[in-house]
Amino acid sequence: MVEPVGQLHRSRVRLNRIAALALVTAACASPAGAPDTLPASSHYHALAVSGGRLLLATHEDVFASSDGRSWEALGVPLAHPLTVAAGDRDVAGGPDGLVEHRDGEWRTLADDLHVRVATWQGPDVLVWAVGSGLVLLREDGSRFEPPALDHADDQITALALAADAIVTAGPNFGVYRDDFDLGARVPTTAATTIGETVYAGGADGVWRFEHGDWEQLDLDTAGPVAAMASEDETLWVLAQGGLLYRSGDQGATWETVATTTS
Image (cartoon, rainbow, N blue to C red; front, side, top):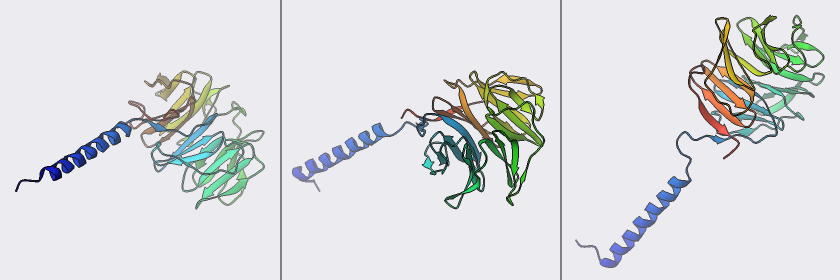
């Protein structure tokens, strides 16, 4: 059966409109693998990851993400969060204390500590507090002060665990494993660990300490490293200019996940 001329014309018009809409949609979509938008901030302080879920501490708030591409503001009750630790319960710290996020709500763990950095040590939270040094806040609410780390100071920027050792980093002292100087370049602004391997970042990119020596990784961060986090074989690196990088193979290859420029 031959379709009437008028009906055929209307069908062609509809097809043309559908094709045009498809072209517009494709043009507006982000190219595959293109970086998404990172929460804008005057300053980025810390990253943490657990179970593939990221926490980001900016000067203004704490944000959560399942992939590093889309972010949710958590409304942390701190004036300026400086650190985060991710887990079954998340914690954030700053000049006005340490708070815990569980079941969608924040509660205060300590309001008498100026917390610079924090990490999980089993079910307890290990922090560096200005004027106090290392403090372990136990799950039952009690506190314990581990042996002092004489090299560290209140400008400490990273605290991580490597097996039974405590890894610290700061712009004034580099990177230490317990009280052993790893000989990193200064200033060092971030550090994390994968197993026994220590990763550190600063103004000159990202470095890996393995077998007693430092090796620079092939990553141009386009700015000083602000924070690092790791889980399994995955490394996350955040540059102060607002670029988030991910490596799924311990730093061998990298992708740009998000940037403040949309």
